[in-house]
Image (cartoon, rainbow, N blue to C red):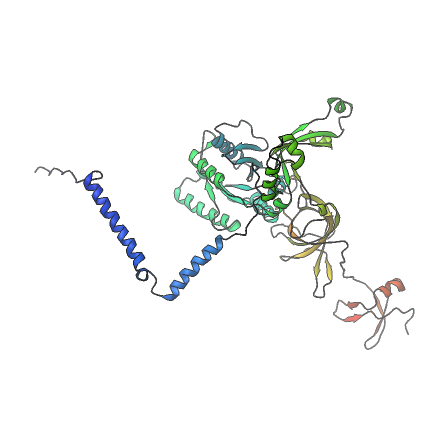
Length: 517
């Protein structure tokens, strides 16, 4: 029996008069539906007043979340380049990502990546890429000036200690924009395991940053470069991202070095190799002090002057490429110069050049293994400065008295007082015990974090004394103690003080006696 031949199927007409009429008819029907919705809105809404109120409340909440405080636009005519830091543990692909993004924006290959790389990404935007190494000094310096952080995570291993260290530093010195990038995804062979891993890492990343933070995936490497479409997506987000100026950066101008040059005479170096040097550093001026209206008035006022004369009156414009010459620099700075370590020049406000007692609310980090002890040296990062000082920890009692603590308490805040530079209140404070990378690099390095409360000319902290004495005579409510104090003056100093024995007997120092009555 012969098989029935298959008939040719009917194809709907996509062009021509009939197709045009059909499209018009369908379009007219949709317009009628929309008109019906607008003509009788009560027929297309909630039947329950409670659900309607919830919907209205949700709409108002969403609109309220979009509101922002008005910010003064301090952006100059030619804005400074956006500083993008590529952060992550070793062997995670930081250099490869920078080279790939540079090639994406400029269509040129960078042979050797050392120090900051500045390029033009659009008509009105420049970008500076800088790689953040594992050194704690570099991490602290970059966290103070960065505009956008690309946080690289090895997906085959997970989040590492350096990632959480940098996030804690960011939380202390002002939190800029953070984007996550997952690399080494080609190590996962099964798609099911890969999907599960992506979901797990995304939830952990959102826990540390915020719900909905951007997370990009770099699947594999071909010919030493990441995939073009993945770099294109990442570069597009970098180009359109808007940055909110941080309070510290807006009030304290700063400069980021692009390169360094030794200007010392060779004859001076030949006579004394250890002499102080004169160096020249080139910066992108990132100062954000000029108000928008004032800048506009200045431009109109000095527009007719030549550029050299105009600069004498109004100074260097923010975002300009300037050269700074610094004399009397120690020779070790030139001999051990490494371009991967950033050079930052930060400015101070008029009242921040003095020294005084700083009172800080501090808490030992829960991942730091050691307990901090009073009078132990501690390296403090506060504002632009990083210095070593001795902290005295205390807790404030209900009567306003500050009682000294020998060690930092567990899981709660305490007060820390130390002698250091004057800094405005509400400035973040970060404490570490060592900047040496060769000591305990496997341990968490951030010892404590805190906030500046106030500046003091002098501070008063009381300490509990443990004294030993022998009861000489004991009456009903009075006891004569022998050997507790060495001199009558010392006893008179503590007259009226409350005392408590180990067994729990409480009392008060009444007076000094040369001999018991």
